[in-house]
Image (cartoon, rainbow over all chains, first blue to last red; front, side, top):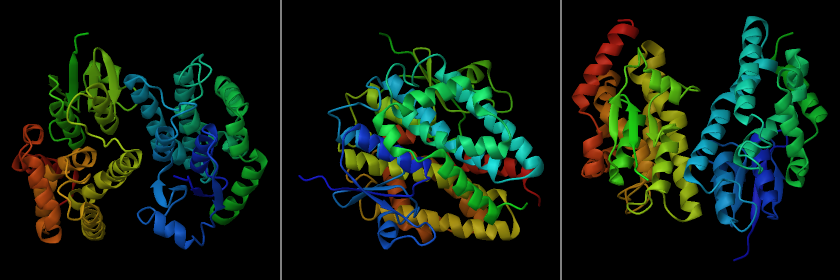
Length: 219
Length: 219
């Protein structure tokens, strides 16, 4: 069967980045289609009627929604190279736990850093740094979250790194000073071609956030 | 290796119910330990320091946290009988999508039905029934969510059924009138020993919610 793979995505999405990386880890050719989130395509609405969100992975006409589920799907379908999840059930459960933790906590927490003001921002900045320190503590002295090999948790988190420059700027802190091991880990991830090719430039993300702030954050 | 399995749980938890059912589907003997959530045990805090929540599955001294992850873990470790997830990658992704949907939407939505008042409750009741109708539509005319066999999505949702009586009472609606196929599905699930043994009595859950309402919901 021919593999027709389409990814409906939006370039600054740290969730879309996960799926781009996973596809490239496996060497899967795919058609990238940029969505205008203010004017979503009929295909997006048809393929993800429940959430109407990107990224949507369309494999031979059938949609897979939610980035963490897409990454597991890609790992199961293209199982011939670069395993993403570990094979041991306990290590798999641990990897899933941390991706779930990132899903539950990171997106909301990072928004408090750059999309709020006053006391809410002060509390949000503190909570966000604590969250990063929890992740850094889980990483420990390992090269990657799963150990020696790049894998599921690395893919789950690395997209946020492209937003770190904006968090530093609007949070008026230095993530590198707070979490040096996490920054060293991110730089290690970026040495992989799959990651380097899938992540946008930090400056471009920061400009994007500056535009969002103009619209949504009171001066 | 001997399998020592301990479940830290709280009897009305629809999340704990998932793990109880999965263990019983596999015929795994386990020690059930009831937690007092107002005074959590040192073991719970030690085994789930990140979220400090039940259920926690402890297998040979090592914790697995988050109920949907526990169910996948149980399916992978005790793979000899009653598969919970389908083997086909696309069907697995679909099953994960619906459990993720339940995780993201149901708990918050059901709380609006019995723990709010006034306009918030009116809107919450409407949204909750819509949510159930989305799930009923996904079920369609199949016996179970995955088709002919009881599986991951059924385990993910059935615990909420024990709370339906309370939703009817405090929402002043009839879920059975709104979603008759969903109720027929729940009754089919209850014919399985694993489910019947793992779910508490609806009346007991309703009494539990009545106590919560006395504490937290203004008259």
